[in-house]
Length: 250
Image (cartoon, rainbow, N blue to C red; front, side, top):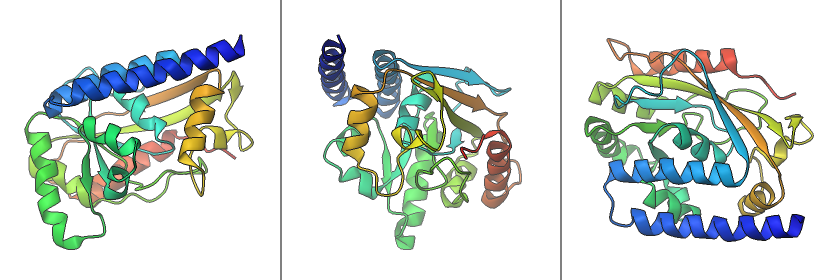
């Protein structure tokens, strides 16, 4: 029975990815976000990943905004887009990855070179234009995935795009609460989080073909209006909110 389930999951995974790539090939950015929303939900259903939304913030408010979220795994993208259509900001290295780079491109991701200060202004304007065009965009300001031991410092540079576009910031805290019916602990967290020298392909194989179920909580905070705040003040406020909710894995 387990073998049948693994084969079914593997075949359906390939089907969903192929259909997603085909349907997003000539779609607008807004349509790509909508399709990513649809197919993320399909993947979560296929792999029995249950997402619960809590908090006082509203995801039903479709006014474009900049989402700031903590980052633990590439799975975060599926979790977030399953509950709210969104484009993403990512570093150039992801674009070069054979599979994930193609999927991210088709999902409407804006790839930026964080190490190039000379290109920062141009990329900031492109990012702001996406917000001004009515798109919600998600940024992981930690800049990399963590191991669940805390919230790393936020990089505030690209929060400036929300200020340029005069769009609010929506902080979100992602917490992985259970794997196969058991709480996430230091012993099993490497099966969910991807950090250090973990193999990306090995992690995908483990999550999608071996694990039976997962529970995730997405805590949505009130939006932070731009007002007269600067990017560092907004970054600090969002990080404080997320740190106050996130339960450290230790």
